[in-house]
Length: 247
Image (cartoon, helix red, strand yellow):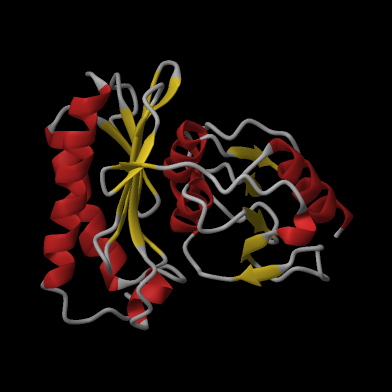
């Protein structure tokens, strides 16, 4: 399926999530597994139905693998930042990344609080709300505004930091120059649904993304976790990785 057509399907899934969230009365914890909210459950059901109905496999944070042998596998986080969503903080997203045999092909990350859309197709660049984006160009940690996930053990050399609470959106913010870098200060806490959508947006925008330990980021199993670092430029990425490793 061409990348543009894939984006249409991903958009249909994200819009289905928005519709069920609009009708949700209880945004609190679901009482299922730790950290799972009612929003996660209803959003997952809505998105998976759309994607499977279009003949795609799905790897979802909330419900695992569906039809993993299909030609296209969509890695899905129905509500990335669901704690933010439960507290009315407008930084939470539906993140979708379609993988084919060559890796990430198309990605859509939608801030469900604001409607802001980040999208990318392999080899075709990245856009925010239809406008072409690129990273800030920052190359020095001392000048960087850095997004964090988890608690750093010490100051890592940034000029300023932000802890925003939704990794998919944080990575897109690096892609679009809102942040200069993103550093995961937890240890292997993020699954592929957290970062693959933002990863393709970053790559197509010209930003760089790596795992702290140099491991492959494009994975297709719910059991693997990574420690993701992203930056506007290769020199800044090298500094961010060094600072995080020393921490």
